[in-house]
Amino acid sequence: MCGIAGIIHKKAGKGVNIGQQMTSMLQALKHRGPDSTGYAMYGKDNGNQILRFKVAEAADLEGSYDIHATIKDRMETVNSRLTELGVKVVKKESPTEYAHRYEVQFSGDMKKVADFVEDVEGVEILSIGNSLELVKDLGDASVVSDQYGLNDFNGTHGIGHTRMATESDVDIRSAHPYWAYPFSDVAVVHNGQLTNYWTNRRSLERSGHRFSSNCDSELIAVYLADRMSQGDDLETAMKGSIDYLDGVFTYLVATKDQLGMAKDVMAAKPMVVYEGEDMIALASEEVAIRTLFDHRIETFDPYHGEVKVWQN
Amino acid sequence: MAELRKETSQEMGLHEETLKGRTQKKFFSIDESENLTYFHSFDVDTSKSATIDALDMTPREINREIRELMEKGIGDITVDNPMSRHGVGVGILNRLNLTFSDSLGYFGCGLIDGPNVHIKGRVGWSCAENMMAGTVVIDKNAGSTFGAAIRGGDLVCKGSVGARTGIDQKGGTIIVGGKTGAFSGFMMQRGRMIVLGDAGMNLGDSMYDGTIYVGGEVEELGVDCVQADMTELDVRYLTEKLALYGMKTPRGVEKMQKHISGKMLWNYANLEPNEKKLIL
Image 1 (cartoon, rainbow over the protein chains, first blue to last red):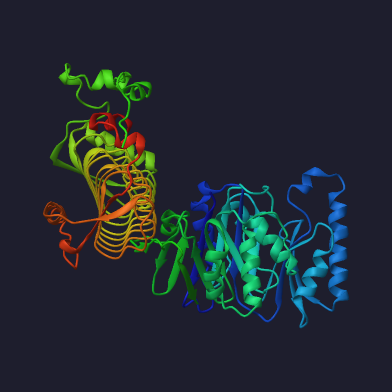
Image 2 (image 1 turned 60 degrees about the vertical axis):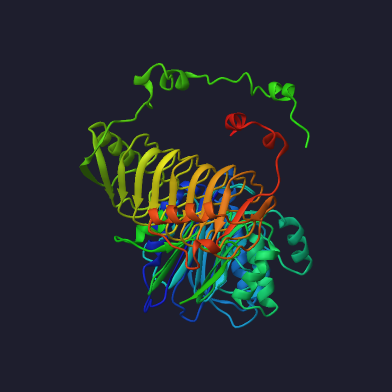
């Protein structure tokens, strides 16, 4: 059934510890999906591009004797390709052997970078953005948060997901959030099932878009990317998605300075919203939002076919 | 319309059907008055009060504490800090005044038969599912499938509710102070639903009995749901029912729209009332 959550601060100033807030909400939603947990959080833009990518699946480490050598080879190839394209890597971090975070300086076409890097076998770009940090891995929120050091993450807004696998495998590739390739700083999380996934996927692939997984939720990210590439703003693209997507869904999307929510026409998937003066928090269940407060709060359920967008 | 042949209903087992099973035999035999009660139901005194601070309690611990207080004869219980937890206040089968000082999560107050519950907050999905009798009053909003399959009692939300309100409703009354979402009254079989605000699309879809009153606009009627004329009896009923909970509709109950089933189901409409009881 999956759980999704989001938070946006209107007056974040130098940033709020949204890492801890998102972990708190996602841990409270663990019962909705224990397979994997993912975060798309937005921190301070220091002028560099942030490249998050993985060179193997977590499960690969246990499935092959030569995986460590393979990972090393893939990393060397990725680094040489970045150099070849003129991408200057100013900071490297490796929370795990297979997941990496690079801060890079590059003024050219990042789509070209993404395509060239992903051309390396086993390599997947998780996100590219000026402030987006997309992290996803197997396990619950506390495990992933500790693994990637998210407990002290300061930022303005974020979305997250706890996954119960239904349409595809239990792996990082099928975990949420999905980056809306090739758009910087756009990410999506989804709760539900899309029944026109393959039809629409083939259509989008014919238009030149790429899919990195077989998870139906990725369709939302790619669709929004497609609409925005044709000039739609986020809210218009999201409203279009209500008719475009068939099935049951509630999804959250985040951009550099916005957080949006959309619900299908049958309102088959839950969402609870808290709208305060300084902060908006959303989650599949109110029990997640309540972890952020020690006092009573007013909440509401969005209606069928409803789209809402908040700005920070 | 052709009549249902007796052999058909006999084949369906309706004539031969008798209430069987341990529960029916043990607790509902009219010859055994001492057994005219549920297992785990208690005689309580509503003048005796107690408060539970649920801040650090699990749903199971909260429900167990409520039961233990009822066992002691306490009939007026307040639960502070329920923290939107799921499945709280369920399975209460006797008279009780129960107050939650804040919001509940999913499946709050489900499977109850008799208590008067006041929730001073919001409720998540499926509040009061399968309620048999009593009252549940919610001060704020409610999530989807509000009052799913209720069979009796009054379920009142003073705010707005989500989609599929009263799905499979088999009796009782659901009152919504605000608006209700899509597919409200879906497969409704009996009882009344009163919505003072607007109703979403597919209202009363596939309903085959019961009545839905709407004070605001109806986005779209579902299959089998049709509008009917308001009668003096409807107006009187609505006036008295809403007065019980201090609720009003801005345009007056006379201007509410009444909806009923427009299509009779073959294997339902041809049954006698006592036969309908058996299949509901």
